[in-house]
Image 1 (cartoon, helix red, strand yellow):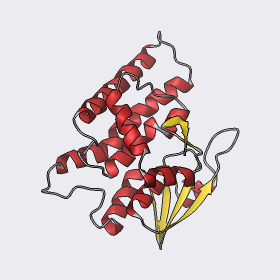
Image 2 (cartoon, rainbow, N blue to C red):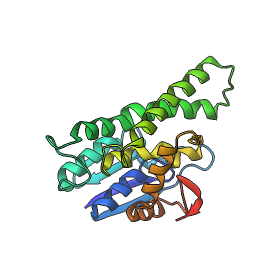
Image 3 (cartoon, rainbow, N blue to C red):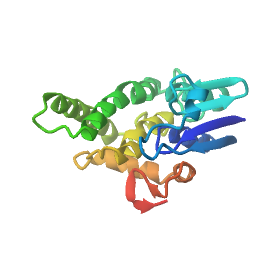
Image 4 (cartoon, rainbow, N blue to C red):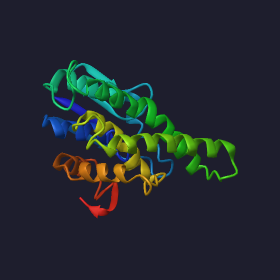
Amino acid sequence: MITIHHLLVSQSERVIWLMEELQLAYELKSYPRNPETRLADPIFLQLHPLGTAPVIQDGAITLGESSAIFTYVLDLYGEGKLRIAPGQPNYADFIYWFHYANAGLMPQAMQYLFGAMAGDDSSNPRAAWARERFARHLAMINDRLANNAYVAGEFTAADILLHFPFGTMSSFAPVDISGYPHIRAWLDRLSARPAYQKAMKLAGHTQDPAQPSKKL
């Protein structure tokens, strides 16, 4: 059985959501952040050299990095669910959005986050660059969702990976999506999924992180 080491208010909640969508049995171990520094619990340095979440254990295997964990779980236990197979329509779309979530969007979202936390103002050219680049990402996602209910056409693991900057990460640096109605509609669809609602509760949320006004 897979054990998920979950850091509260972190990307590891996506792994819980993945397991719930696949209806796989797992053990969940949750750890709080340091209340002063907001850093990860020291246990993560014992689990993985980088000391960050998520981390899973599966027998003798210990694995970090969200995309690697998703690939591992889908390959070994997914039975073809939440992905699009090679040769099928939208396969390339699935591959793109699955990898883009952490390789493309998350680095730019972190630039945006660090700028917001540092209090960068509009006169700071680096802050302006980060905002402009992040806006490009938002526009691309919004355009994709204008004619697709989910980024790969159907609901897949790519949607789970892509959700984080619009959900829990927004508690650190709110993302204004008022000008991106298709992202808002996509988040509404994800919020309605029973597996999402259960996973967010298990992850420690009492309210939907993508819709803070709604209780779970």
